[in-house]
Length: 166
Image 1 (cartoon, rainbow, N blue to C red):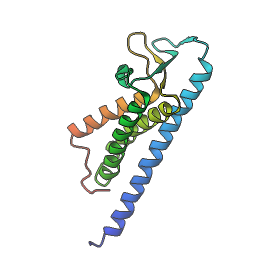
Image 2: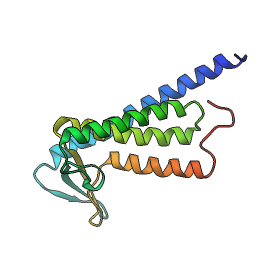
Image 3: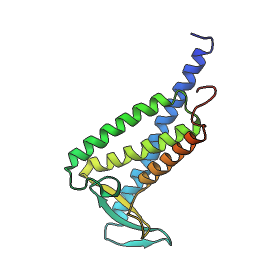
C-alpha cells in the first residue's frame, strides 16, 4: 500500500457518493416531472411550446416502443438486470473516470432508474415531450441519450480516464 492510498481511497469514496447523489437527484427531477405531466396533461390537452409540445403518452415498451407486446414483468426484469449491470460498471469505473465521464454515467443511470421506477408502478413509462417529428419521450430519455453521447465523446477524445485516478 502506498503512502497516498488512504487519500486515494477517500477520493474514490467521495466520487462514488457524488455519483449516487447525482443519480438520485436526476431521477427525482424526472419522476417529479412525470408526476406533474400525469396530472396537468391528463385530459389529453397539448401545450404548444414552439418546437416542443407537452403531450401525455404512456409507453409499455422501451426505446421507440420496442417490446411493447411483451409482458410488463419481462420488460421490468430485463431492464432491471441491465440497470444493475450498468450500476456495477459505473461504480467500478468511478475509480479512474474523469468528472465528465462520471457525469455521463450518472445521467445514463439516472434516466434508466427513473424509467424503471416509473414503469414499476403500472407497467408503462410516462412520456410527455413531443416534437411532431420524433416519438414522444421524457426527461429520463434525454438523460440517457445525452449521457451516452457524452460518454462516447469523452471516450473518443481520450478524456474518460484521469491521469491521476480519483
